[in-house]
Amino acid sequence: MRNINHDRICPVPGYDKHFRFCRFAGIEMIPVPLAEDGPDMDLVEKLAAEDEEIKGMWCMPKFSNPYGCCYSDETVRRLARMKTAAADFRLFWDDAYRYHWIYKDHQVLDILKECKACGNPDRPFLFGSTSKITMAGSGVTFIAGSKANIDFIKKQFTSQTVGWDKMNMLRTVRFLQDIPHLKEHMAKYAEIIRPKFDAVLNTFDRELSGTGAGDWTKPDGGYFITFAAYPGCAKRIVELCRETGVIITSAGEMHPSGVDPEDKYIRIAPTYPPLSELKDAMEIFSVCVRLAAAEKRLAEKDGLQ
Ligand SMILES: Cc1ncc(COP(=O)(O)O)c(C=O)c1O
Image (cartoon, rainbow, N blue to C red; front, side, top):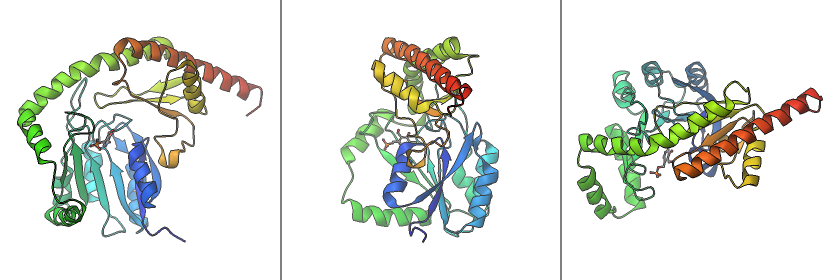
C-alpha cells in the first residue's frame, strides 16, 4: 500500500532536517545524486514525469548543505519547465545560503520568474532566513511564491499563530537595512569564515591528496565541506574520531532515513570550533581517514569483505 502523504525527490547528500521532516510527515524520499551544477536532471525529469505520487522536491539552489554546489542556469530552467505527472508538484526552494559566499559569489537564476515564464507559477515555494546572518535560532524567516501559494500559506499561518515576533523583525530590519548593507555585513561574515575553510582545505591537501583515501568538495560559499571517504569507511572514520574526542556529524545524516548506501559521505562543519582546535581536529580527522582506508583495503585484500 502506498503512503498517503506522497513522495518527494531528495537530492543527496542533503540537509538532515529536510529528511527528518519528511520522515516525521510520512513522506517517502527518493534520493537523486547531486553534482557540481545541481541534481541529476535526467533522473529528476524521469521521476517527476512518470509518477503522479511524486509531489515535490527539496532544492538548495545555492551553496547547498552540505555539498556546497550552486544550481546552473540550465538546471533551474529544466526544473521550471519539466513535465510533472502530478499537477500540484512543488519545488521546496530552500535558499538558506543565498548571501553566504566565502571565496566567490555565484548568481542563481530566479526560479519564480522562470516558472512563471513556463506557465508554472505555482511550482516553487521559496524560503530562507536570517538564521546564519544575524543569530542562529533567532533569525527571521521569509517565504515567497505566486499569489495563489502565498494566499494558501497565509491561511495556514493564521491557524498556527496569532502574531509574529515583531520586535525581532524590527531589530532585523533596522540592523540589516537593505540589500547593500546586508551584502556589506556578509562580507564581514566571509572574513570570519574563510580562515576556517582555508584550514580544513589546506590540511586535506597536505595530508590526503593522492592517498586515494578520500576526496572533498571545495565550495565557494555556504557552511560545509563534504568529505567523500573510501567507500565503506565513513562510519569507521567518525567512530575513530570520536575515540580521540573529535566529534563529527554522524555518517549517514546527509541521506534519507540516515542510510548512506556507500557509507562514504561525511559533513565537515568548520564554523563552530576556534581556529586552533579546528586545525588539530582536521589533522586527527585526516589520520583517521587514512587508517580507516588502510583497514578497509587490507580487509578487501584478505577477501574478508
Ligand atoms: C538548508 C538549510 N535550511 C534551513 C536551515 C535552518 O534555518 P532556520 O534556522 O531558519 O530554521 C539550515 C541550517 O542549517 C540549512 O542548512
